[in-house]
Amino acid sequence: MALALVLWRVKGKTAKTIAALVVLGIASILPIQGYWAYEKEKEAANAYRERLANAQALFDERCKTAGEKIYKTVDNVEGALLMKIRPDKVNFFDQYAMDDPYGRDVGGRGYIGSFLRAVSGTELNKRVAEGRRVGFSYVEVSDIASKKLYRYTGVIKSVDGRDPNFELEIVEVTNPSAVYGITYEDISTKEDRDHWIAGGLLKILNLQTNSVIAERTGYIFDRGLGSTEGGRGPWEAAEACSGVDRKYGHNARFVFKALKPTEGK
Image (tube, rainbow, N blue to C red; front, side, top):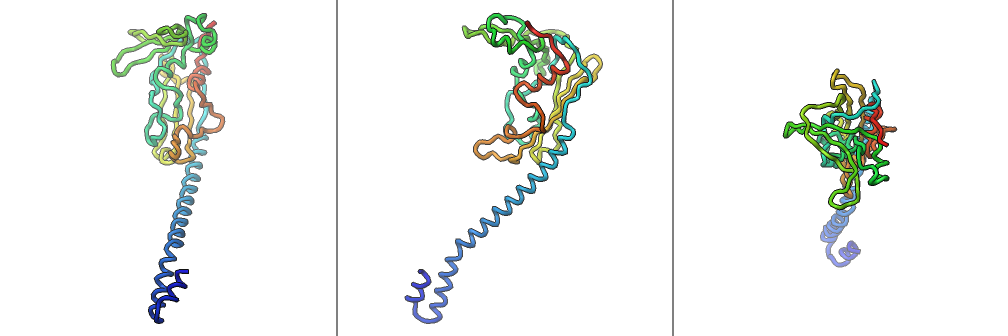
């Protein structure tokens, strides 16, 4: 319509030609912009598919080394030393923080409590007591800042008038009594993290012989390659190697396979 209007209103052959070219040039802007946008989207999609394929291949290779190795089992273990506590803060999207996103379960005091059974007060809350029937009688934790050693036990009691629940009690001790230690480390490489892969190693040690009696290696991979769209947490959305238990309490469950704790009544 614009072209027809120009050809009708503009006089002179040369003027008509110039005007028609201007109209056609303006009209071509949107299609050209659309084509460029399409090409950019196609290029980005191809790049993502290539990155995803490379990351998936690396993840599959890492999973070949994942799994549980239990070299020895010990019955009736009363307690253990937690040589390293998992942080309270959850790493949702820090790509290069070496805090073992694979092994994340629960942090701080919750991590300590996951290894404990209720040693007293079980009659106060039967439901909670049943869920806390299996676990160590105590765990010892070294406070790096104060350089002090603390022993934690789990009890069921009422605090501030609330219904009786599982609580931690803590006392300072002079010397460790635990024979076995539990620790973990992040085993990711720079290449792993570049591809949004994280790996962790959980180890159980005999502290008297300094030998490893069990270890678990695992990896997770974010197929979104770090996307935070819609409030997404890449490490929370990451998938683990097939057949891996990462539900709440998975660290303690693995430890209890090797260090079989005493069982409450």
